[in-house]
Structure formats: C-alpha cells, structure tokens
Image 1: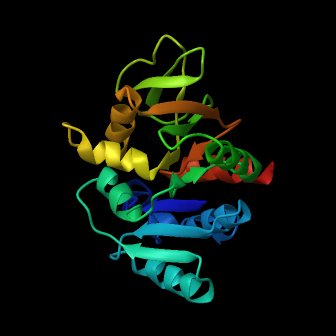
Image 2 (image 1 turned 90 degrees about the vertical axis):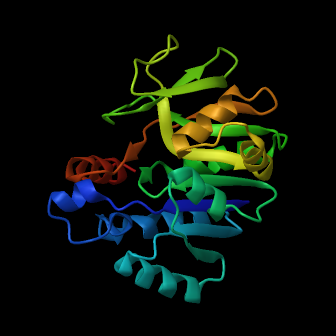
Length: 235
C-alpha cells in the first residue's frame, strides 16, 4: 500500500514563537517530524511514500532530497497549490488503489497506524477509513458525525460537535483512487482538505468508516510539540 504525506504548510504559528525550522522539520525527540513520519510509514509496510512538499522550505527539501536518494520508496513531489485539497490531489495523482494519507504534523501510534492500513486493504475501493480521535486539544477541530454502525456521515468545523459526541478528525485518511475521482466529479469544488472529507462523507456512492486512535496529536505550536513528545516518550 502507498502512503502520502502532506507537507505544504508554512507553520507560521510555531515560527512566531521563535522556531528556526520549517514546520515539517520540527524536532521530536531529536528527529525531524517528517523523518519520523516517513520511518513510521515504512515500518507499516509502505511500498512507497509520496510527499507533497513545499519547495520554498529549504531545510525540508535538503533533508528529503537526501532521504529520497538513499531510498527509492520515497517519492518527493514539489507542489505549490492554492489549498490543502489540491495538495492531496496532486500528491495522489496516478495512484489507482488504496492509500493512507497524513498531514505532516499528525502524531499517532505506529501499531495503530498499521492496523488502520490493514483494515483499509480489506475493504472495497468505494469505501474509506478515516482516523478519528477523542483526546481533542485542537482549537478548531474538524468534528465527525459517526453513526452506531461506525459510518461517518458528515463533518463540520467551527461549530459544536455532533450529537454522537466530541469526535474529531485525527489528520490521517484511508482513501483510494476512487475517492479522488469522486471528488473530481463533484459539482462542488473542495476548498480544503476538511471540505473534501465532508463531501466524501455526504457522497451516497462512497462510504467512510471510523478508525479510532487511542491518542492523536497535531503539532501547530510549541505546546503541541511538548504534548507530542510526551506521547512519544510513553510509547
């Protein structure tokens, strides 16, 4: 199975707090965040790791160039797009089967990520599995509406959670080439990664099912970085 990393954001909040590195190169336990994620995906059996990389991030591009030259499973795609959905679209161009995509700052357990990939491999192409979390610390979570069957039927942001409880996206997505075709054929153009999730959840011809991570973190600032390192220290 192929894996995808979305690493196009600027990480402006962290840099405003004094960080001298680009967001993907944030050190976690002495390793660049993006390097940890690459190794995690390879540990999960990735046949290839496609990385949508912002070419303006010199430190990241230098690091990724070295990694890709040493391992042909790592595919770096310099991408400049208008929104996060377009980054996903370009990063997955040419991938027909199923894939796991993750934002560069999603911090989850390796064994759980492997379990998610295994579950994805056993379902039809018109089904997806989306990573969810209940340990929510994000200021603006993407809330998921989860049915008792486990199917996700809607997402919303900037509002109160759905009646099913405080359940939010963990920034990890198990999708397929079929999902990308459904989005491309939609009458509504996705304006973000979150919006594309919402459109898929509402699409009657594509089913999304839940996968709960015991804990998940996203690293947007120095406080998030400390929480992520604490989580990794407990693993």
